[in-house]
Length: 572
Image 1 (tube, rainbow, N blue to C red):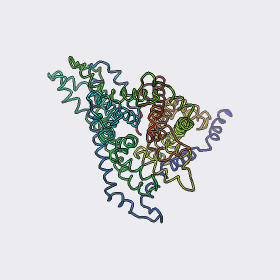
Image 2: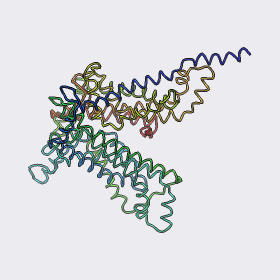
Image 3: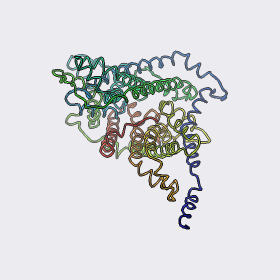
């Protein structure tokens, strides 16, 4: 009897300290620093006068009445609408050809589209500068030599050039949504159409495409949002053309003299449009998910393309050719050429630029190290915070803990460039003066990609039955020990996937870093921006190849050990 009575007393002592409030307070403090304070400062300074700090709407009046500031807004909507339309028109047939037809080379096409997905579009823009700059681009020079013209016909430094490049790297969004929709599509509907005598093409037009239309619209919205919030490609292609969009105009507000208040006001419509369209997309995807659950799975019969197999393969290869093959070759060829304009010809081939970037040049060496260091730190902090919030919310350790998850997802609706302005406004003055330090970049990267880590871990924590932890606690373990010995090992794969899903975009992030770095805290992406501005395309290409190599190696290893679905996160 004494032994039986001792166990409850031991459980009582081990459970006497409730860690729920500790977890809750830790999560609140983290979200205050990362999310609430920067967004709050962004809203506050948008209605402040620069000198007196008194409240005013003058910033909004100036931002949206002067024609010099209105033109970038128009350009942004033209750019985003064009990019989203082209991406949908290309991504939808690509998804159908790869998922539902007998087109040859489908696995290779899918791999190349995945490579385009993990390639930063601003690196694609740099590659297309090498290929299609008006006078020096290799394609233009080849065309000019063939036609005996003074210069080639392509001008990548234009709104059309930016639309072309950005559309290439937004095709994977529509492709992914539509391909997923096709995999969930009930086969019975298509079978019934075939039984009634409809051809494969008519079935596709009348049955398949209408059913995946929500996925097409969702991909269109995602491409629109990515395009309207993109900074890198417009900065490389449109600033030289003096054709500004909203993101490049925000960057110009931070040139001397810095006009943070005006930039904050100017960023508000971008934030509003992003929030509105993400709500629309969520409703569309929710409706699509509800529709598809009703269908039964089944073995997919591939549509025979017949004589069209090879022509359609040629069509499908155009996007990977322009988004992966040509850009990668251009960057690689430039990085091994002593003088890029001469090309990779005998006598001009060299590995000098790799030695220069990794060993000889202290600026690039520091930038490489900073990118890896800041990315790893942001991934670690984001994963810890995401786990803390996911566990607190799912286990309901404190009343109202679910609100933490909503706040944790808030950066998802804030474009990176807008978030950077908020972080700059919050931490560029006392009491927490972080501008010019590594900490402000780590905060920016952590905040920017925290929703990715949270989405991954929230799904996995919710899938773990709390009875396992309760059993351990019944046997005398504290909640901390139960979390460490039971829950954490079960989450090992999710923790590693979350870490990688933050680390990969963090080392390639430009839109946040460009506002917050100083020469002492430069990263590979900001160094690329500076080299491009100075015309050092050999240095640009070398750093670009290093970023791509790091990314592709990490993704390949992750695919090998975590599976091909490790990048498919679910939104909370």
